[in-house]
Length: 470
Image (cartoon, rainbow, N blue to C red; front, side, top):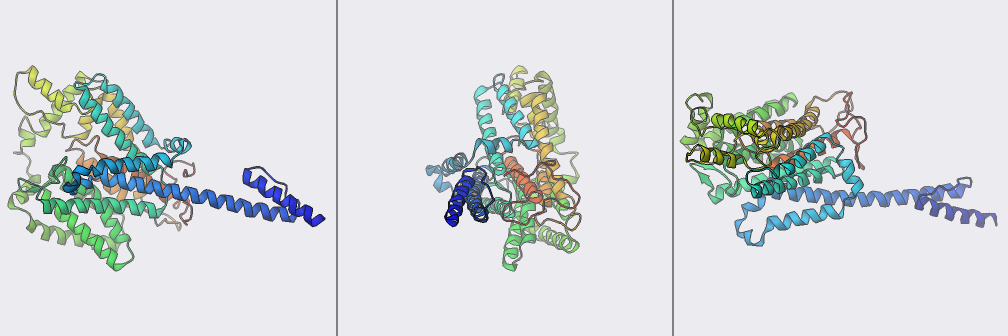
């Protein structure tokens, strides 16, 4: 009788445990059944979260390849099938069906995410006073897609495997686009581009952002075959960068390489610099003489059109400051810098090209005003802070294997390229921002099923003392 009573009480306790209530543990059988039921419920919850996180990883991979890199443009024969649109819809469905409101609210706690949302809201307000409302509205939609890319990364459960997979997707996608650019003959005045929406300068900036991740993958790999494959990718991207003939892209790549190598062990540093010296010596022979002369002109910009012509970058930046002072609060509207140039030409009864800003910071200031520029700089500063913490040397015995100096190197490449290009709404930035957020959470947070340390040495987590969100 006592045994039957004990078994009955144990069954009740198990049911109460699964339903979330507390069961008394006075009988020995009750405690064992409660513990077993609790483990089963926790295992079921973990399996659901793992499946949800995997779907978020797939969504982030699709958005990175399609929106940040535009890899579908490498296959023009598939254009009638609208692969880009279908892929984005699939990614949005994966995100919408596997994301709770609570998880969204937790993701917004990141300071960079809050600044980005502030920039989006101010850009929406700027549409009402824009010079051309249709262009402003289209630009805001592009910006919202960038927010979706960033948000997809914030929803991923932090784990080294997820970070490595997504950074690998970025590298492979850029290599695929580069191969198609060479085979497809997308050449402008001897300079390699991707065709479509990217000219050689834009493509060079994308390569400069991607190179640190390719180098990190090569040095991280433990298999000789994998290491050789990644090194081939690094060499290919380096030669491709030279063939774009972009001086700004070359400067960005050199700075990012130095920053990345500065935090490597001595033998890896020597190997990397040796590889780059050989690559530069051999790669320069594969480019036209006109590109070589263009790259060599970096040291002699006194007679360059950028500093002498009214259509050069310096003259455009000066006019941009005047446009910003004329519209200090809401700006001329997202994507409307060229329209501001056209309005100036019309007022002065001149003819000429409607030029873009050729500087991301001037572009944001002119198009969204001083408040919008402040929000954008807050977003970039948040990314800079996180990436810098991941770049610092490892301290103490609890050094994490997810230490990522490539994040700061890649962000530096983008920030340098942004001085010469209008990339305020470029989706490559939002993919990079997502990788920075994911890499830092992986580095400082303990993900389920891994042995990542909570903290590295004496450094504090980049999100304060709060635990990494799940």
